[in-house]
Image (cartoon, rainbow, N blue to C red; front, side, top):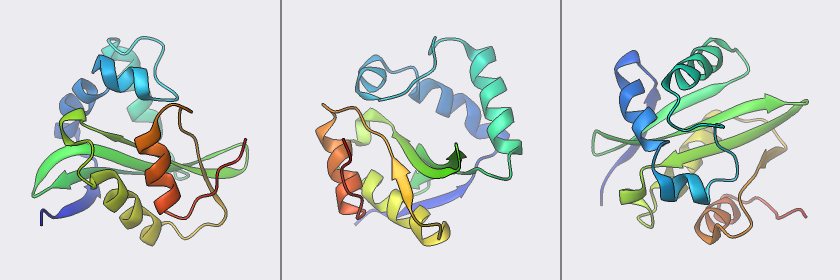
Length: 136
């Protein structure tokens, strides 16, 4: 079985992460995206802010050493939320579930929250497997 690991985000990861967030199908399935996924300056500014924030834990997801996405926890309005983005070519392979489990081992805050588009069945299953309950 392939090994999923997490590591801190480096400057050299930004090009790959930017390209992943531009995939039209991924953007369609995501609950929250940038206003303009093609705006590299906005992406870089956002990444600089979250990488500097002590309230954010943001990690690259690797699969057998290859960057395949990112996973993060962050605080919004006093609640700690989790999020992830997986390169579409790796959907359905358990990468998101394993990456989220690894993040939850490191981020021991309770309760945790997450958001997913209501029609994103795969992501809803990942969150359910992680022990999250659906709120309406």
